[in-house]
Image (tube, rainbow, N blue to C red; front, side, top):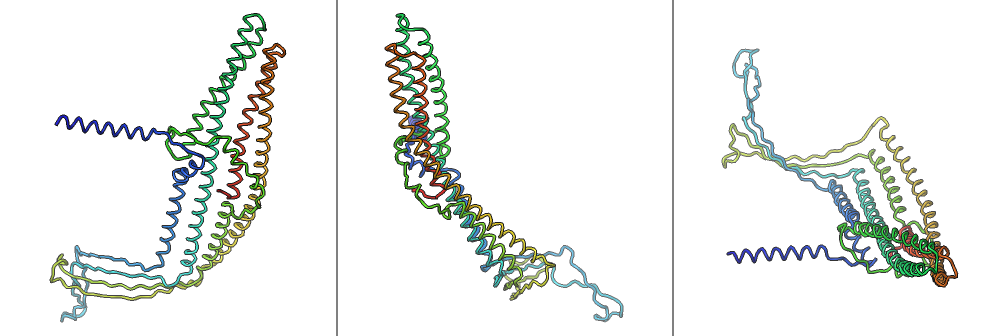
Length: 449
């Protein structure tokens, strides 16, 4: 028995260990994999899917109001003290002017009915069916917009992680080079072949690099956490990115995007505004339909049992059936101009929606033009930053050689190093801008691969 318990506890321990290992196992993502994963697991994206499901249920909920409705009812009555009625006395042979108290019916009654209701015609119901479809379309458009926003957020977060990793790698290389230069310069200074200022200049640069390195490490940790939140996974999940910043930049330089027509009718903001206009048209129809008559019918079946005691479950209990068929026609006649005011208000709201749609179209065209300009500028700045980086690297190397040969000063070397570090960061930022600006343009044009 003791050995069996030990065996069971060992299995539990091992299973917990494997479970812990699984949760801490790193997740590898390319950018495309990260986008696909986020569209399935991002919490905002999942809620957008639920909103569509809710809209579909609401559409059926409204549709069902015009379909046959069957309801059952059971009414039980028990006279605690039965009501008394007075009959003229002459009916039973008494003097005229006298009354005889009597009780009608049994003390207890049980009535069971089933009623079928059917809407035959109602203008507001027909308009409501169309409105339910529009509402579902609005939910689907909102889901598509959410997906685009999640996609752009993943691209931005993914790019920020790569930027921090590249920045960290460059700073570490710069730090190693600086430490080597500083050590060599100290030895030269100790031999009396250079001034102390040369050592101090390098120490200032080294201190600045060390400070930047610590800051970038903190930013890297934050960027990973932001990416994990965007992906919809645990904040502290170990995530590994398989794409590089250089490779993504090359893939995202697509000049053909700049040649696309400025057609904004595909844009989701435009489609949502068009949905709103359609909804206002239906609202106007709804107000007008309220002046139409409505027609409905019903039929019910029921049984009633009467007894002075609760014997309704006994076999000898007598039940009396009944059935009723009815039709109801409701004709609006006069509403003190209420319906007219509602119709006029709906017309005003429709005009507002039409102007909003036109304004949205104009704003989107402006945004497309701006996004194209930003994307073209990002490509141009990337090419410029790439050239400047090469020039800065050559200038810095030349100044290193001159410095150790005693031709140039430490101040000139520090200037060349500072220029190189700035060019490195500008190059990294230019690559990230190309990726982000392309994502921005694709989002506005709804041109997603």
